[in-house]
Image (cartoon, rainbow, N blue to C red; front, side, top):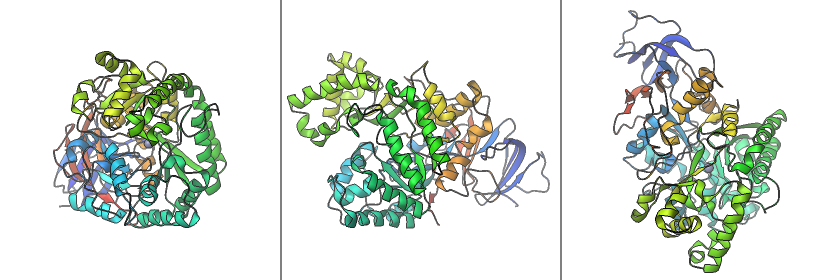
Length: 549
Ligand SMILES: [Zn+2]
């Protein structure tokens, strides 16, 4: 037998952004053996164990989610159940460990493992075993257990910082800081693809320009990407004092200056303009990035095609409150101050608590409110909006997850969303937290079909080849994956076959869990994992990808 699989009669969109062509392709031992630039309905010269007729379908590289958090799902053995949401939208590879938080690496003998557990709890669906310390041990755990998608993991700055110094947020001094760098470098040696920063919350929030420049230097020295959740995405944030200009643009400026100075490959995570007060600054923000690149920086960004995104319920709480959350929740003075600030902030932000939808309630007695916006929850609870939000945060100890709206616009006013996502520097991502209960983040279900549906088919803002490149080849290039993301001979056979007429995201604000239409067959490393749009249960055909190995 010459090959294991022959895919015939499809339209090949190869992920480079170059023109599509009618062609066939042969797969052997998990890799693309040959790409035929002409169609031949009987390749008598080639013996194939299996032939798939792709007539009427686009054959694309498997989609890459460049900003994922599934590293908090993957260590659990039955994760394919949840991960089917990604496979069924054509995704075959994830870049995880984002926003500064990754399950590894940890500092050996860390006195703060309880704290790590506490933080990880916020974003994992089930308690993680946490029987690893190093990056190598974490990746080995996943290799032994098997994974449903290919994984390129980043090393999280916040995870290492917490495990070394706990909640002591000040810069620890140069000698101490060397220890943090050593842990990150070791993780890179053991297979991590880059370093991630989460600067919107503790402890990353407290990292000053000096610390961030050192981290950028490290990534630049090692020729790996530095991904960053900025200190602010909204007009006002805990990162800076109020009345000091647009915080989101200030946060962007800080990282762009570091990128210009160090030359690091900087990937700005989930490029968002949150709240109506930021939307007019979208053009300026994008221009700042273009100007940084003109000055020699290497900056790009990613974003998702929805006007909402997931976070924890603590997102709306100021830093002073969270520092002593347990006490403050029962202190009437703190509560009064908080509610006053919320009223004040809503005007500065162009965003209020009724723009928040409860996603995962964490407590059985609040499950009935999942899917509702907080103004609806307040009506059902018979209290004020702010009281309802306060109670849910208090009673779940911040564990409830929410969908925040007014991200990059609102229905009927989505200019920022269009500008950000169709920008040549933007790649597509989900940023989705996956929970087995509650409301799904629609991005976990429909990101890639929606990007094609909206920007290519409905709005005509991007060609099909360009749209596909922004979810395959471009993403691979940003992370440094050289043998995936493009259909080429000897690359791994991650393939998504879809119907360009049928492809559609079926999620709505109320039903965020609907399976998309038009994704037909998905292959990972040459093995079929989605048949006629439905994931095969329990499959673990992905690979743990290690940089330099
Ligand atoms: Zn983030």
